[in-house]
Image (tube, rainbow, N blue to C red):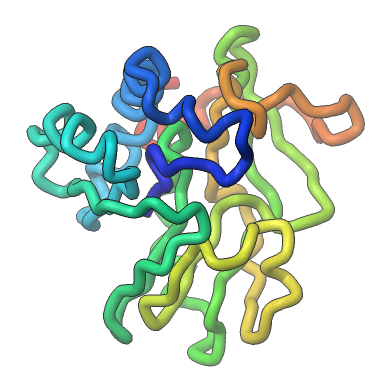
Length: 206
């Protein structure tokens, strides 16, 4: 699941998701990174979109049999799946490791939310791949029981009941300069350079 184009509650950014320029840019990133990564995993993808842009986005992704648009106008959502669903939250401009769902399956049955901390960051402009260190959970997480994956911000997930940490770099975050959350990190957060051969496990060409 990805929050593709949902209006933010902040007044200064509430209008941007309706901009055709912004949507075209998101769709380009989605096609470059998310699609080749997720399409080969044999899962369904839900793209959450505000009601004012849902039809536009649905038309632009209609060729993807494994993806569909779901209308959602609330930033924190409210969407729930079935009790048998395991929902992974992944940004529409990022990529997922091919072994993610196997890692989730190996987690204890008591785990309600599977968290990650470590991930890789691909700086598109500098053409560099880095390992990244952080003190709070990464945006990637899996929710069992069909829970709403956006009810709690990823930075606060660790404090919720029934969490389990999955070790390893299963998220590839794309640094493209057009997303506030993808600003280049402070030097101390960059662990070290990583070989671009790691991109193959995310469905991308090294």
